[in-house]
Length: 91
Image 1 (cartoon, one colour):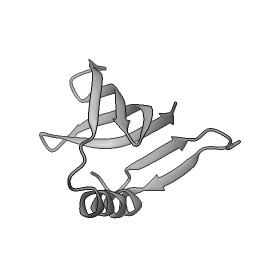
Image 2 (cartoon, rainbow, N blue to C red):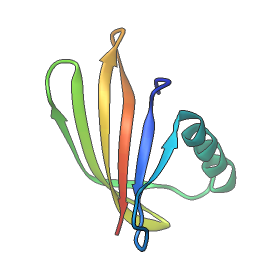
Image 3 (tube, helix red, strand yellow):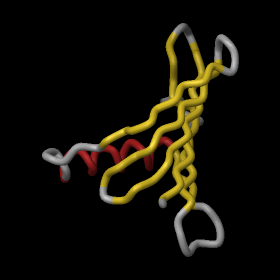
């Protein structure tokens, strides 16, 4: 993840979305791995769309604790793909 990565969560009952940044996301992933090591996330119905040779959008349905949809923005930097932004909507 690049330093300018962010994720936006749209949660039911909240008027405005919640934003988390790179450090928040890394901390959250570490907590998920340490607490839920026996559980698995499912990523269903994945679709990858190339906007151009340097940018892609990935959509998938996520099933883990709560059901939701995720849209990720990926950007090719220095010859490698990096996750640059993410939007999650809980269903």
